[in-house]
Image (cartoon, rainbow, N blue to C red; front, side, top):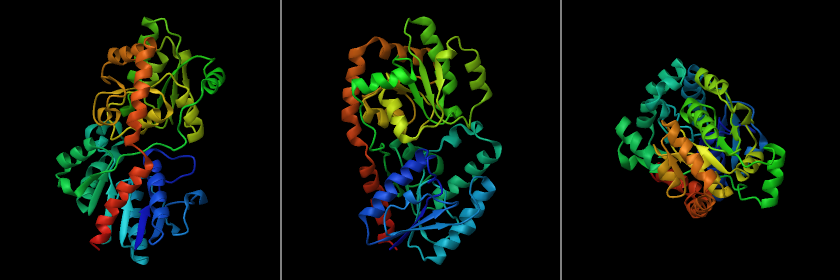
Length: 376
């Protein structure tokens, strides 16, 4: 069989959540199934490190799909042409976008529908594109994978998709994420936080990541309690808003908020494994990969009590109301003041992490692909 894959989000040193899902699952599938051929469809020059097996053929087609009009052109003309040219048996799209006009059997991975719940977080044109096309993508796809039971339920309810058409494929964590020794942690903290334990946030600085409330909660925590604990923010500022900027400028303890931007997986591992706790209090998540990465690193987790986060974190996190600054502050205090609680959460996270691995993700995604192959 020939399996075509949308790999436009495989960009060297710029992998986001969907990019990591694509890389970690598809490379394992291609390696495990040498009897099948795989076409990787890129929209720009690709890094050769992504071509991990001899049964993978990379194809580059334009235009670069980074704008709603270009999305439509790329999927409806460029991708369709490649699917027809190579006579692909299955098309896998890990970012959920599909070609509505192509006849190829299609598996769409729809990670979440955050734009349906928080449309104003997106630019007007992108919002219109997503709200118009994603219901159509969901209906056009022959099968859908999504990353949590929460997202599956959301897709069923909002798009009226039959539940048998959707399978849950959980995310995993980078295999290099693991605990550091006490000596490594101390040395890292000396270099990056003046030797102090710190909270860390990881993710794009998007409104739904709730950065403004996290900053307010951090300032309240520092004003209320005598803990000299910095806050490190790891993420790209592409979605930095006026509300975030105003909040940051008004902080009493802004000198202790450290922005480090996007990091490589290797550096991010060290930052996360050396942290006192992850503070991941989004208002909406389809999964929340940093939660699982924290489990793998032996780092305690503070996360939100909404959407998918309770499902993913289970009993291995402190939950906060993301809409309440006081609730987030209280969670920070619990972690900072109770070493036994933190150790207990880490132990539970070590057990919880066994539910999430990229090997399991790849196996589950392959089962979705097999369902399409058997029906071709």
